Length: 133
Image (cartoon, rainbow, N blue to C red; front, side, top):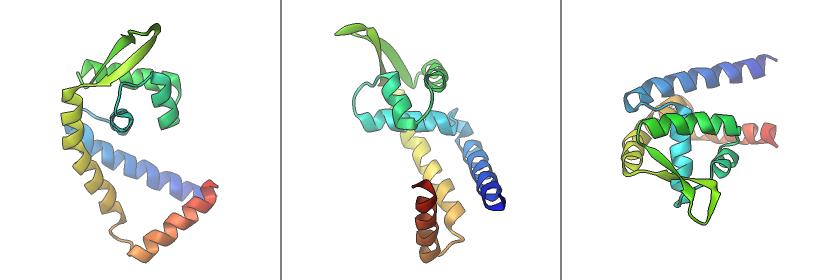
């Protein structure tokens, strides 16, 4: 139990630190991840595709999209080939925000691991992969 609780607390601390650093961009970790996912698709995506990619519920995707759309970082439109479907587009402002926020994200994440040697990082990764399997 101690191991699980330590992992949980470490993750919560890391997310809180990340979100503090992302706040000037109006982003949370979830919003950033959705922008990254949308960019990775390299085309407009269905909300269900984004949810699958991020392993979150449709309700979570909907909330993230509502916030990002209000900020002008994404926009939704009906699929011209099937009006029952909605496509999510990354806007130019969304691309720009992502370009500015990504280095902050990387620096914050990396700073948490700087206390570990490369060998310790590799060992930790292998151990976590064992748990995940």
